[in-house]
Image (cartoon, rainbow, N blue to C red; front, side, top):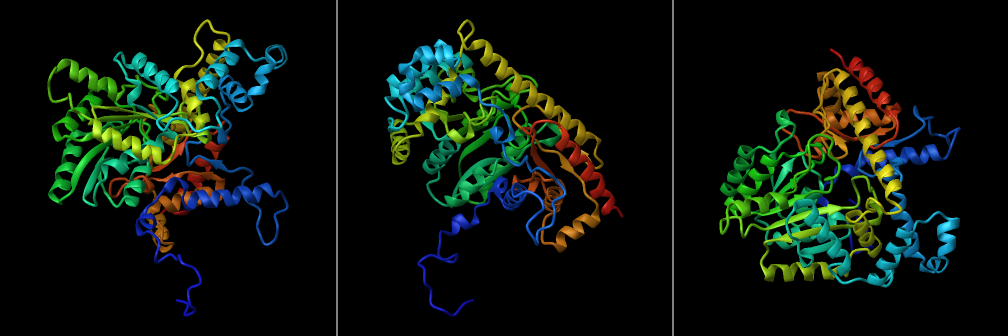
Length: 494
């Protein structure tokens, strides 16, 4: 340690220790190295000494669900409306828009309506979001579930992540507060709980049952936490799953709701992948709760608190960078709702452009409207492409030695189990890495494909996984993985 006097107020020893403890694997060391490679490739060839040529010509960022970075095209209707929202004087020349630029009348009408409601996308909105957009969200929820929705219960957010952050800040009252979180899980939850100095109560999903929820595992995790003095206040479910891709059945949804009601837990339903379902159909927790309340009038489900979250970042929309989402509150005490409103007000409001994209997501062009045919073509094309790439990647994993994978059901990810030779585990230990982490670094260095080790999401002791998106176009990069795996296994074979 240096003996020279400190010249700055902050150093690594005196910043918030809870921030230091937080881990966020999807943008960790692997992602940093992949960006270094990307920058190196961008410089061109020959590489600048002393750098060596890389054994690949492109980095594939399969570590994060960032669709448009991986060449998913934006929906034309959405971007045309945004162009008018960002520069309203374009609306003064409707003939040019229609005849010169190919804008349909419903694009122009939607932009005018949104501007009439928000005045300008450069202005703050109400803290909970533009009221008319919240009304559109409520109508979408009603049409999806067949039950009423009150727009006053809808809060527009900067992506689902800011909604999660707001809810956890309200729930986590003291260090003993615990939140039941599925394992494997999206590390937003564990990282946020670390920063809040609250407790993650992990419950394991059942890989043998296509990563479904297992109520006996949830009960076991809950009872253990209570026995250790944890005040368990909420349960998180990600449906469809991240990183697993699992899509929960109606029975799974009902079972978790019944458990939450029994233990008086807040139910947090992360449903940002609800349109990414390849097998079966999406079952919302809002509908599941209303069905239970209808079947048990005046019963134990009437006061169950449910917060459901959705986002423009995933699905066929993929507008991650515009940061738009919403959460709907059901069954919360009015005084608690006032505090949630106050908390979101501290950040003033969600980005208004993101709010407008939420409106278009929940209220897209309808059949018979001028933009519908192109919208449907683009939307279905993206969906089919994702489904085909998911299947191609699944087929590749199935052919790889020591790798097994669940059928792709939904979301944007596969989470295969990998088995590596003992020699690879020994080499990983020498390098101070976990075996799956070691595998993923070797994969990146050899192929330019960046994935995330399962240890970054949580996994059962003794098991190894990796998470990959299937967003990247084409299948060449899948071939890179299978070729690498064969070389890796041979290198470390006993």
